[in-house]
Structure formats: C-alpha cells, structure tokens
Amino acid sequence: MATKIDTCGLSCPQPVLMFMNEVKKDADGEFDVLVDTDASKENVTRAARNHGFKVEPVDEGNDVVRLEIRRN
Amino acid sequence: MKFRFNFFATPGGVIIVGLLFGALAVWLQHSGNPGNMGICVVCFNRDIAGAIGLQNAPIVQYLRPEIMGMVLGAFMAALIFGEYKPRGGSAPFTRFVLGFIASVGALVFLGCPWRTILRLAGGDAHALFGLAGLIVGVGVGVIFFRNGFSLGRSQHLNRFSGLLMPALMLGLVCLYLIDPPIPGQPKNGVLFYSLKGPGSMHAPFILSLAAGLIVGFFAQRSRFCTMGALRDVMLFRQFHLAMGFAAMLVAALVLNIFFGSFHWGFENQPVAQPNDLWNFLGMVTCGLAFALAGGCPGRQLFLSGEGDNDAAVFIMGLIVGAAMCHNFGLASSTAGIGIHGALATIAGFVVCLFIGFFNCKRA
Image (cartoon, rainbow over all chains, first blue to last red; front, side, top):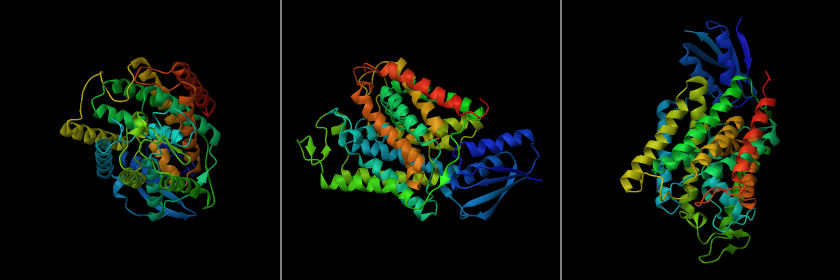
C-alpha cells in the first residue's frame, strides 16, 4: 500500500520536503504524491529520481496529478 | 495537467536561462540602467513606487518597464503552456508583511538577490557581505522549514482573479506611454521622473520592456529563483536552481570583464553603501523574508503572472515597503545606512522570527 502525500495548494519547498520526510521514514516504500502545479510535479519528480526512484505521472483530473513513485 | 517535456526545467535548460539573464542584465546596464543594476527587482519596484508618488525621493523615481515585462512574460508563458492557474488564500497579509520586510533588508544593502549577483559580477566587494547575509538568512528559513513551517494551502480561484496582476502591469505600460518622460521635467501627467541619480538612468523603454518579457517568459518555464537556489542546496543538497544562479553570475562576470566594466574592490562602487555589517545584516533579514515567502522577488513576480494572488500580495508588500523605506529614512544611500535603517532591519528580522515560529506545525 503506497503512502499518500497530498501537496495540493502548497508552495515550494513543501511538496519536496513532505516527500523527503516520508522517504526518511521508509526508504524502500511506495509513495503516491498528489501535485497541482507543474513546478511541484517537476521538483518532486527530480527529487525522487535523484534518490533512485522511478516516477509515473497519472492524471487525476481537476489539474491534479498523482505521481506514483516506486523503487527502481 | 499536460504531461509535456519541459527542457528549461532540466540542468541544461536552467543553465541557459541563467546565462541569458546575466547577459541581458549587462546589456541593460550598457544601455543606460544604473551600474550593477541591470535587473534589480526590489530597486525597480522602489523606483515604480516613486514614479507613482508613493515616495518622494527625487533620485529614485522611474516606472521601470522591466518589472511589467517580467510579469507579462510569465503570464504569456503560463497561458501558452497551460500553467495559468489562479490561486490564492495562503496567509495573504503575512505575505504582504514579508514583502515589506524584504524591501527593508534589501534597501539597507541596496539590492535584492538579483542585484547581489550583479554587484558581485561587477567586482563590488561589499556584495560578498550581502551574499553571506543572504545565505545566513535563507539558512534560518531552512531551519523553520525543517520544523514544519508552512503558510498553509492556497485555494483555486476563478479565472478572472489571476488576470488582475497582469492587467495592472499592462495598465502601467499604458500609463508610461500616455505620460512618457520628458527631458528636463520631473513630472509628466501623473508620473514622477528622476532628473538625477539612479532613477534618471535607464535603458530605452522598448529595450527594457522586451528584456523584462524575455526574462519573465523563460523564468516561468525554468522556475528560476535566486533564493530557491540557496535554499535547495541547504535543505535537500539539490543543485538544480543553484546552477541557474551560478550561470547568471558567470555570464555577467565574463561580459563585465569583456566590456571593461569589472572593477574589483570596496571603493567607488555604483549605488553601494560602505557599512558592511549592515550590508550583511540587511540581507540576513531580506533572505529570511524571501525564504519564508517561498521565493525571491523575481520568482514572486513570475508566480503572480501565473495567477498566484498570494505572490501578487507579496509584491504589493514589497512596493509599499520600498516606499516606506524612503519616507521613513530606512533606505541606505552611498553615504551609509539610513537613520532608522538599523532599527528597521532588526525589527524586521524579529517579526520574521515570530512569523516563522508561529507557523511551524511542531512549534
């Protein structure tokens, strides 16, 4: 079961910070991060890839994207 | 949300954008803007405050088209790439106060983070103290973020709300065209124009506006942020934005050396004040205010162009703060800091600490 992280409405650097805090708790976990701006999507994706995750974006509608973040 | 590749969000993209901004800034300086002030977001908003009569310092009054261009360029990029998203409601008055305080700190140092880069690139050694202060201020902000600092979530707004800031900037462009500067006259219609000092030094209107549009467009695509550059290194060991910051510095430095406008040292630097303790402390306050607000003044302009009303409120705080800096004797001059500059810097820092502390979830 992936850990869900809702970053909608939050500005830099909070989306990345929330994701990184969850990674610290479970480095091999699965994470679903909800983002609602392209900047947040790029920032979280970049941080995840830098930490060895693969990222799959899924359109949730209403300008929200779910980033499915899994270990490579 | 569209899933399209954004080249400017890659390392190569942000480096190209940084190089472009550094080059444009030096070009603006050679075209008439003040020394080491090709683009300074706080200084230019201060000049705008003077142009519309919010402050009466006769040497810093000019309706800087770069600022209008930066918002409108970001607005165009956001529209073209589907990123125009009106939003707001995340602690607006707190953001206004942070904008106000950021102006105070920046005008004690005489420059925002953008001008810190340009002053370093021009050889102004005082800027080393400003940069050190900026790093410390952003570092204090990072401590707050590590302890759960947040100004809360913004809400989606209707499509009209996001148009207000770009419309305001378009209105200012129109105002400039209706009441353009007339040589030798300190006022035309409703606008004030400096006849001497930094406010009287400016590139031609169309060049300034075009440069602003280019900066706004590419900054929106690349998320260029001079505060975020330092913050992300300290918070995540993430060097993405820092590469843009470094590229802007390198481009401006190389071009200054090439054009003979690089003069290393503490003496005879343009629009600089000599008291380095307050250059440092001014930028500590300024850096902390930008960190808590989530972006440098440029980034706030670009976000406001995307429809972010909270960023627009921050900019309004910045403009009012800049005006009060001159009305209340807080701003520095080349002779030194203003008579109340030290007190305002410390008070601003303390207010930022309170804002930081009381918005930490773990506080």
